[in-house]
Amino acid sequence: MASFEIIGGRPLRGEIVPQGAKNEALQVICAVLLTGEKVRIEHVPDIRDINKLIDLLRLLGVKVYHDDASDCESGRAFEFEARDINLEVLQSPEYREQAGALRGSIMTAGPLLARFGQAVVPQPGGDKIGRRRLDTHFIGFEKLGAEVEYRRNAYMVKASKLEGCYMLLDEASVTGTANIVMASVLAKGTTTIMNAACEPYVYQLCAMLNAMGAKISGVGSNLLTIEGVSELHGCTHRLLPDMIEVGSFIGMAAMTQGDLTIKNAQVQHLGLIPQVFRRLGIEVWQKGDDLYVPAQEHYEIERFMDGSIMTVADAPWPGFTPDLISIALVVATQAKGSVLIHQKMFESRLFFVDKLIDMGAQIILCDPHRATVIGLDREHQLRGVRMASPDIRAGVALLIAALSANGRSQIDNIEQIDRGYQHIDERLRRLGADIKRI
Image 1: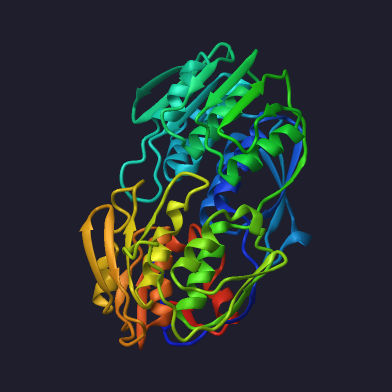
Image 2: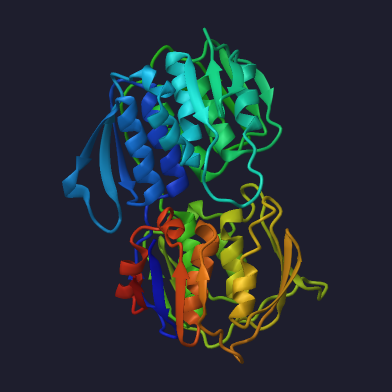
């Protein structure tokens, strides 16, 4: 098991290009199962979760061609050809083991159901951040005419045919919406999805499916209408920059008093992310499609207009993404002022704050969903400690704290960070960080 050793206190300076969006990649790579023709996907990040998903598709019989000439910091390109799928693999122990180790494997269910009438979903792994139910996926499949049975620690989904219908989702689940959309594109008739998630990931998936020959209207809204077609074709699709990386780099620059330019950030797809960090007092300037974070000795948290304490809370898009709540929290520890961090969507994501308290941060964990941060205004620098990464986002929050801390820190279990951040240690060293993998 690997660890990061960090000597903190070094400002990050220079330019960095965000990787391709991990959450989008998990969806669009699974969408290649909807056609036997070649699909090219560009700007694919070199991270553990995506590489595991590609290996899972290979196990199913998908031919994967890697464009070696595309390898660079900004991502890779692959061509996928799902012409000959071996459905017997779905019942194999090897498939269950590989799919069960990756939460993103749930995204294979919609395409397999649509094209072949069956799918197997082992109880998925992923981050341990609280309950992450799958009801929305399976209720949607059932409304389309599928049967779902849970046995031997896996969900068996089958359908002789899928027929379009109207459905009101019980929650605006991003992966649930994506899975149901992929199941609907080859269904007979028209499917209407109300309360659909409208995150950029879903927008991108729908745009790719339309390029493949699907008929999806309302893209970008919470009301999607899908007219089923008989077949889909190949296409070329490019992933957006990862908005979570963009937010993470803003936090790193602020905490280390760095001077950082985030290149090609696709600002129009970032929603409230720059605005929330500005409310924490961080200067974030837009230069074309780049974001620039200048060096700041101090940054002060805003208050609401009535003078009350600022609250940063997550919400479905276009609200602030829950994946950046951990980053906002750690950034607030060195701000001037106080803020209430409210993680509404997951009940175990704030438990990492005990590590920050060990480093000298002033945080009151009110309950599993809320923490009050009293900013130190750099009067007391965080101190280096040894800690472990509990999940992807908390792991990077701890990494940001370590980069700003006084002395040596060690972060264990960094396989969690590698699941979502591409060669993060190498990229940070190019910006001046003292970090090594041990």
